[in-house]
Length: 223
Image (cartoon, rainbow, N blue to C red; front, side, top):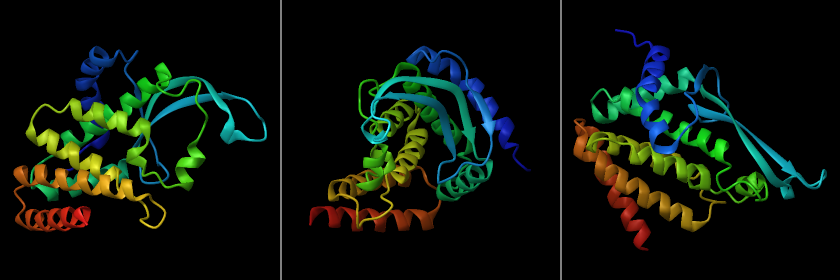
């Protein structure tokens, strides 16, 4: 039976929004916008960042205000591919769990825009992050959103799926530019995620691959 992903996303959002409002005080239920998203993201929160300072040096401008657009963009094609990967990984229907984690993550980003979380008064440094290759998942705002999404997991399976999603987001794009500390942090995160996933997976091929990967990464970190 074909899954209606739009409907599933809307239903999951309706189900979990009350808990988000209660836990972090998100002002109102976000609107979902189904569209193509550039890059690797399946979902993205929409907000505005206002700066003041030099007109000619945008990377040294100070952030004075942030606003949430209260919209979460969703790329259905990318989401469908990811849901398929996780069903194969666990040999379980993990669709709703994946969507819950991603929506929790993006609603935390909307909250960040609403509150100015760790942005107001700081220098706009997105360029620095790109140049020095801090993996996306280790950015201050991504770490905060990931920690929040993980905290909302209700059981062991949900936690395992969330840990895998987080570790994959922390994967460096390149090991040539990325600082060693982030490579080691990713390997530790991935190893821990695989340990959790093994407990809940029914796929023997994935389990064997995960055990091998954990051993190789832990061995490399010790060097």
